[in-house]
Amino acid sequence: MQEEETEAVAIARLIGAKERTIVGWVYRWNTGALAVRWAKGPQDVAASDPELSDAEKCALGFEALAYIGSQGQRQD
Image (cartoon, rainbow, N blue to C red; front, top):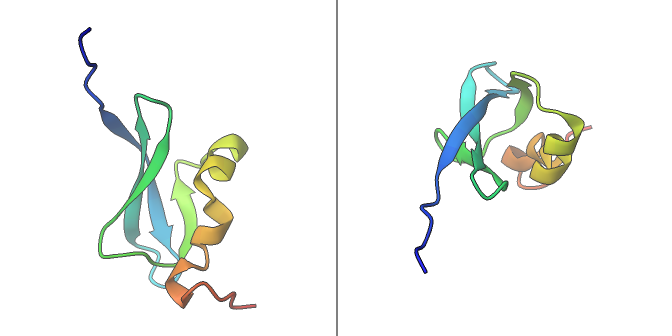
């Protein structure tokens, strides 16, 4: 049996909450899984470009990304 190669493609840029610059990218693997690649380590995220669907946000835990740079504590 031949193994398939695992590949990913970037589907969105992550925009930082502080400076509104690109802080990472969202990749979709050919397995269907989503993953984040950070530019300089995890940071607070304000948005994605293009906008992720609700299902993609849920699978990625997007809401938690808004607080990841603050050591897991919400900044209300």
